[in-house]
Length: 316
Image (cartoon, rainbow, N blue to C red; front, side, top):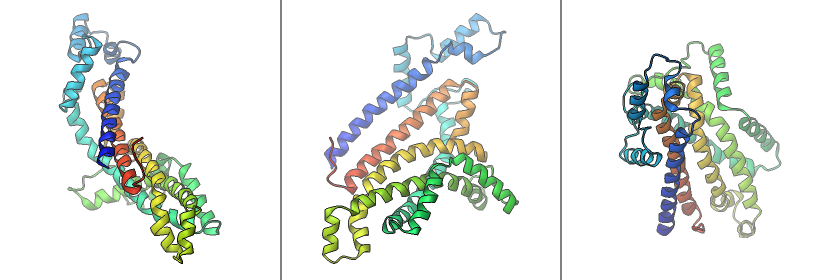
């Protein structure tokens, strides 16, 4: 297990290095002069001021020098400064990140908590009317985007409970009740599509496991169907579920960014959208690095869980 974890950690470092190169080049390879794009239609800027701004952004240095300086600073937690406010980018990101992380973790917990019993119920009631009903709702959930659900929830809340605060954000320490009432709808909007996908994956995985020889052996020993399902089938069906869970968690972070716009939540997503509109490249670059690094870290954790759930998993 230790050898497996160390090898996965080495892979993680290599991937993070590749991510840093891509994120750095992605911004530098945008067509056009970044300084001219930044200045937009401002025709009153002199060539000297353009040269000064280019030097301030470090764009007058060779590309390799720029990358080495940027990576060295990023490893120390310095992602640069906002060209508009002059504030550290890392500070602006950290001030918004907890909101989006909450909007990612809550739907993840809700979807995972409900997916396991629903997936098992669907597999145990194979070919029954109950399974058909659950399958209908899971297909509907997969094909329904979170932002559309969020818009629908806001409309329904306005019709059914007009006094319910549906948009905006209140910190938990200031108003716990107000905070939770505003987080319910975006949490459910993000959780439902993820829940639908997890239920379908777990159902398919369980049905495949239930058809294997060791399950027939367990049944032949006189074990109850409940015992077979919980003690023997579920653990073996968890590996595909973990795979999808890791991918979904990464996409959930992206989905949260969109849902923040729908519910007017001042999270990481709104910060990134504002940075893109303002051509604040240092902030965009830092934000992309944080998102991709988070995605890679989530999948690293999932890889470790593979070995915990199924000891047969080895590094290949």
